[in-house]
Image (tube, rainbow, N blue to C red; front, side):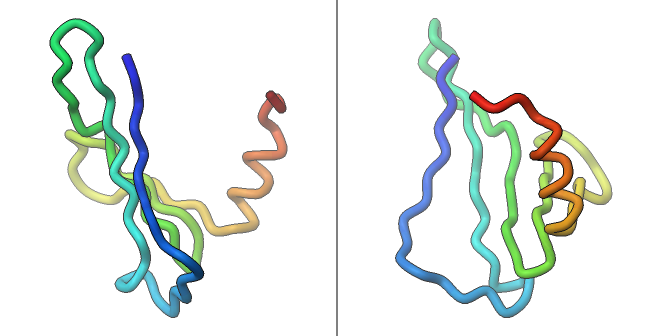
Length: 77
């Protein structure tokens, strides 16, 4: 299963979430070659918002301080 995440931009000011870039994360099935949407990641001035495919209601949100703390708990590759 291959995952693709795409975006092309130079410096981009994001004054509010409505103007934030949204990354679509897709996985490609090795057998069928078909891509399916895993979810959408919005990166804004307030933090990051993850909306997995198939969920209803609010997406998961972390402000930058929370995101920083979460990432620091992860194993470095």
